[in-house]
Amino acid sequence: MRTMTLLQTIIQDDRSHYYPLFREYCERKEQGLRKDALKVLQSFIEEMKQLDFETQRVFVAWLFEWIEQFEDGHHLLVFPLTRGIIIPVFQEWMKLDRVDVRPYRWQGLFVHQGEGLPYLLKAGSEEHRVIVHICEIYLAALWYSFHHIHEDLYLSTFEMDQERIQGIQDVMMLIQDERTRTYFQKQADYYAQLLSDWIEFQQTETIGFMK
Image 1 (cartoon, rainbow, N blue to C red):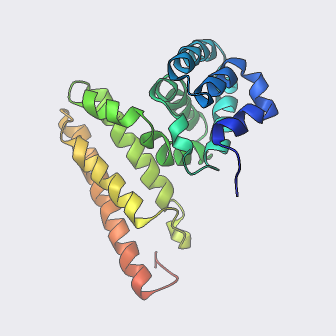
Image 2: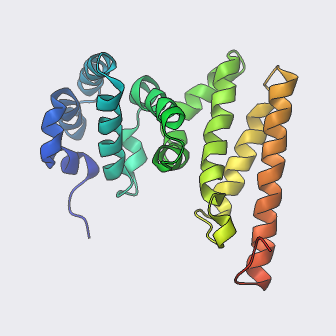
Image 3: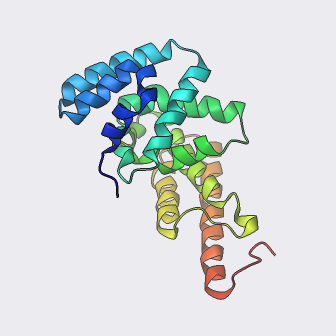
């Protein structure tokens, strides 16, 4: 049983000293000083943006290694941090290393649950690229859920993936470009059918889903 919060754990981690401004942000957030914490966070984001990609990637990996160990870890993913550092790092990471599944897993499981998504949904009708990004986030999560399905290994829950499919369907109609909208429609239909087939398979069989 854990006795410390995620913030307390990060503060006590020796590696947090490599990121003094982020450590200070966590300290102030832990103290309930929300406005002060956000000011420090903004300074950290500006500092981090000046550093090379590998330094940014190491920070994001370290952060998510802790986040995924806590049930409420996504609460640390406030919009400025998500939009300013995490999402850009994930995007570049996926381009440079298509084998490493961590950015797909972390983005799919955590980023869309942070404070950013409500903002993106609100802005979505006015900004095409934001709507597309919402769909991409859900698709990344669905890809991760099923990428070992040929081994009869499903890495999610029915409820979560049903929500992700519905999430795509909820916003894709706001996409003005017909080709892009059709692409996401086909992807949503594909995963909806795959999930339905997997649920049916689980009720009747135990191995050999892809046969």
